[in-house]
Amino acid sequence: MTSPHGREPRPELPEVPELELAPAATRSAAPRVAPVSRPPTPAASSAPPDAFGGGALDLEEGPALALELGESPAASGGVGAPPLLGALPGATFDSDLDEGFVSTRELAAEPRTSAPAAAASTRPWPTGAAPDRAALALDPVEIAIAARFGAAPGPAGAPRYALATWRRLRELRPIVVEQARALAVAELARDEALAALLGSVRSALSRDQRLARLLEPVIEQERLAAERDAGLGRLDADHQARLAELDAGREALRTERAAAAERLAAHEAELDAKEQVYRRVEARWKRFGIEARAPRERVEQARAAGAPPPADALAQLAALEGQAAAMEPEVAAARGARDGARALRDATRRELDAVDVRGREVDARERGAAQAYAAERGVRSQATDAARAAALEASATAAREVLRLRGGVPVADSELDDIRDHDARVLALTRAHEHALRMLDAYDAPAYALGWRLLAGAAAVVALALLWLIAR
Image: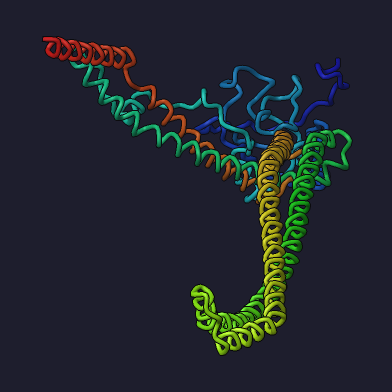
């Protein structure tokens, strides 16, 4: 007769001692295995570990074991599936075996962990995911107490309730904003930690054809972010080159203006000198005209009287007029020199003004380039930031998939602890933010609306009364 598992009939079993089942405090207590006085066989002690419990059931090749289980088979609801199955995943039972027995080979095949590893296994496995807000257990009574809106009053107290609620809402909204900001910072830090975790296992993922698909969206988003980063870098480089070109033009104009200003100073000094020479020559020339007035008047008076002009007056007038005529070429030369110096001065001024105009044009081009650069960089910066955020989100999503494998991809304990810490912080801040959000809705909406309606009605009555009094 074969067993229910399809094996050949086993030989008669030797007598085994009775099992002593000691009840435990909880179902989750780990099984404690106490060997009996018979020594273990070499096969049992040298069996290699097998995480899937592939050892054959054979009580003849190993000693019987007395097991202290957390719950008796009777308490578990029947025979053939004692609680040991939940604690030892590699153990199997045959219906023709006594209850509570498992082969020593199968027990030896179970993976053995050290005390620190066993302690770490009791900690929650990190997920890196956002908590489900709907599943958060928040006591409505505590929320109402923290909100401090008070109980809903009757119609008489509704206006006062509406005003108090409005003031309290103004106090609560900044709290909600601050909680949201802190939560966003914590979520960003968690995503950065997830991205770092993905970076540590990226080479292992890329070597596995099945797991390499997790990197495909990450690679695509990183490529897009790199392209936008490069575009932003080219824009910055082009703008800097344009500024350098404008600065070079401005420097050339500055040099040209300095030379023009130096020439202008020289021309003005020359003009001043020529002006002084001309004025001295002109003064001497005019002096002859002034001295010739007296003899000219005597000659004119004599002629007016019908008498002959005095000879000395005629001689003096002729001498002075001759000297004045002799100085006219010198006066003309001094005037020409002065006018030439003035023309040079004016031309240099016009040149200097032209340099200033070109300088203002350079400044205008620089302002236009700065405005165009600022506008384009704003758009490109937003696109680049969005691409970086998408790349970070893709990396975090891939890291969450790695964590869902629960050890399928080796991850350092320190990184797991880091993600656990971030999960705990995000959970705490999510609870705080959700608590603050629910406080905003903890007031009595009907009483609040009624209060404002009553206040609006009272204001309307007062306004009508004032109008009536004014109309009287």
